[in-house]
Structure formats: C-alpha cells, structure tokens
Length: 326
Image (tube, rainbow, N blue to C red; front, side, top):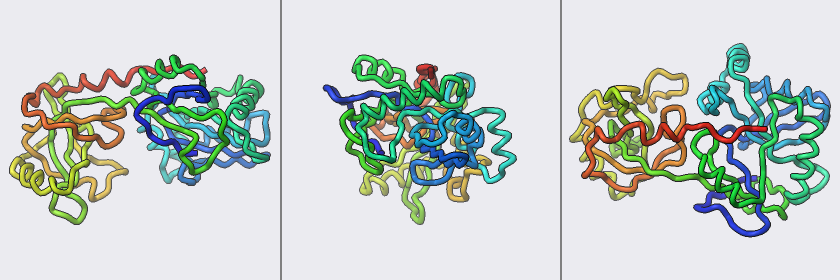
C-alpha cells in the first residue's frame, strides 16, 4: 500500500494517524521456519538484516505477514546512513554492522491472506498479535496509532528527528497493494538559506543539472549539505552561464561532495566548485546525517543575505529525539 503526499493532515471521522518513521519500508513473511523480508519495491532484504530474521524466528506465531519499517537507532536517533551501510555484498560485513548497531522492525500492519479486512479490524488483530508475540521481542516493536487529530499534530511537530512526518489511513478501507487511495503522508516542509558551493552538469549535457548547497559551521567551514535541481528548462542556460563565471576552487572548505565512498559513481564524483557568493532559500522535508535527505526546492534567490549568515544552526536542531517506541 502506497501513500499519497498531501500538504495537511486529513481531518474528520474515519482516519487513523501514525508516525511516519525514518527507515526502510519492509514486508515480513513467515511460514514455519521460512522467513522472507521484502522491500517496498519487491527486493529481498533478509540477507542485509539477519538480526531481524532471527528476531522474527523467535516469535511464537509461526505464520504471518507484517508490514512495517526497518530502523537503526544510533545514540537515540534513527540513522538512515546505517541502514544504507547494511546493503553490502559481503555477509561478514553485514554481520559486523548488525552486531554494532542492531536494527528494529517497527510494525504497523498485519495482513490476512484469507481476505481483505478494513484497517480498523486489522489494527485490532495487530494489537492482539503484539500482545501475544512482541512483549519480549526487543527488535520488533508495535508502532503507535491514534484517531486523535491532536495527537497526530503533536507527532507532526516532532518530525525531523526519528520521524519523517505523519501517516493518515482510512479505517474503513482494506489493504490495497500499489494503490494510493487509503493512505496519505504529510511531511513537515521547512525553509533554509544555503550557499551555492558548486554545481553539476546534467547527464550528457553542458547545462546545469543541479546546484550543490552548503552551510557554514562555527569554525567558518562551508559543508556540503545537499542539492537542488528543480529548475525550469528555460532557466538552465542562464544559470549555467552565471555559475560557470563563478567557478573557483575549493567551493566547499569542509565536507565536500564526491568524496571517497562505495556509494559514489564516477558521475556523482564530478562537480564544479564555485566562489560561495550566491545565497538561495530552499525548502526541505528532512535533514539527517549532516545533509538534506532528498533534493530541495528553490523558493527564491537571497541577494539580501550574506553567505556567512547561512549556518548549520538552521537545521541541526531538527535532528532532535522523537517519540519513543513502546
């Protein structure tokens, strides 16, 4: 079941609200001794999360299908970087990572292959399942849910740490794989003023594909924190001319894009440094691991703001602790 993005939390009777956890969506299947983990896109995940496979095998229930989110807590915050590190081809490396930072499976739905009960029935069944199976399961937790709009708004205000927003689901609708009719997601969109420290050309083109964004730390170092690429085609030529004229190393004086990483491709390491003179206001939905999780959207160019005013304190406080799992 997919979520449709909306700007505001749906209001009215018939809605159930849940935290939108910052992790990997996962379906967990068990039939006897056989356990299978599947990503939202249908890719197998069990080999990357052997700790969760073990935890599921220790449950009293021998047959079930659970829908939930894989997360990894590091120092009280969920780390998306640690999740990505798990996607490693070497089993020995995965085992070492699992031992250092065990994953948790946050469960929010229980699927019934005998029919398609509505959400309110599935939630009752899930809570009964949790009461019987999850009390002593440290790595598998029941995600909270509520029909209270007030509680949903409280969760929404905490978005940006462990939370990625709020999910709203219709209580009267069945589970609908691949559809976006029964579930809505709301993210807390925020502004930030950033310095352009570099750019990348579009693939196979000599026109700008993305601008690389930076923020200054207390020591005056400019750190790469993300990118923006939401340009109108008609603007790309003028932007290319503007930033090619500003080309000047080093661009970023702190963390720079394209550094050594097994995730980097040859293309992702190619970027052009510019003199950090241009300030742009962008909007973002999540800041974690010292960068914007997704691409940002340009709001306006800030000719009225000095680059040195664009500091990390705009965003780092958004990584606060979120609600605790029961």
